[in-house]
Amino acid sequence: MKLTIKTFKKVDSTQKVAKKLKRPLPWTVILAEEQTSGYGRKKNFWYSPRGGLYFSIILPSLKIESAETLTILSAFSVAKILKEDFNLESFIKYPNDVYVGGKKICGIITENRLSGNRVLFSVMGIGLNTNLDRFPKNLENKATSLKIETGKEVENEKLMKKIIRQLRKQIDF
Amino acid sequence: MVRVNGKEFFFKEGEEGNDEKEGVTPLKGDFGQEKVLAPISGQITKIFQKEGAEVKKGQVLLILSAMKMENEILVEKTGRVKKIFFKEGDTVKKGDVLAIIK
Image 1 (cartoon, chains in turn orange, green):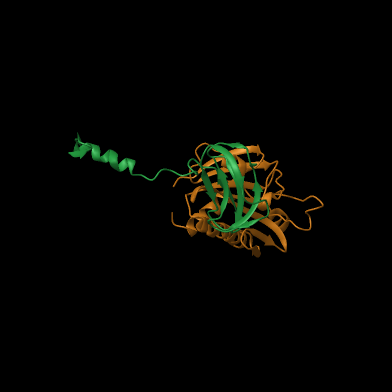
Image 2: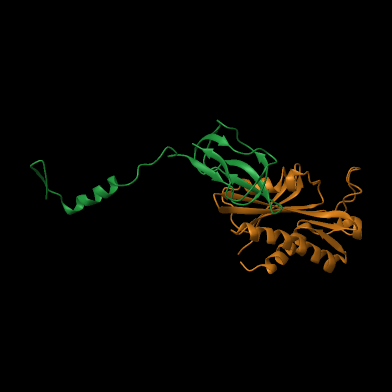
């Protein structure tokens, strides 16, 4: 199925934008350069200045159990790319956070919308610290970025497409 | 033909269907109510509506966190929240009645 990417300079949260879509078609992606109210699980704030990679994907209609599996697979996909493309050893904190050197580099959130027993749609959000030079004081011992770890910058959209390609490879829709 | 108290009643075939309809058990007191059931076991992390509130079909009633995911449970019927059986932080089992919408 075709990937439709909607790009934004700044949004409150790519998850919120995705959930407000009138027609949340599978494999629609909301990509933003910056989030003012990015969030992870339990609505924890996700630091999202310009430079990082922030996107949300509308997933095909799934059972809840499959959405859970997909969340784990997406963390695995990110970890695989970190190893293969950047030679970074990472650790997946089940099921949805990726750490490098004990610091968080990527967070994944999946939200499902249910009516009765039916999953109307699922939205998976991925925040990956890519081209960030530094973090605020309260995060500098907890978070890291690709740039801090490798000294190099990456093309965010290209990397996003690679993550999604990896993810789609893991599943057969 | 049926004779009752000396009067004759004739029935056409088509009218038998009406008899069947009359035989349906009348709806009881919960007519028009919607029980919102927990589709999975989990923890209620956020309740957006209060008892007595008017809600529209498709509005988010609450968030049920399960399997490390956040699940928005929608209202399936426009009406009024008659009762919410849990509070934020409570854990629920699949099939539990979360709320009643009337």
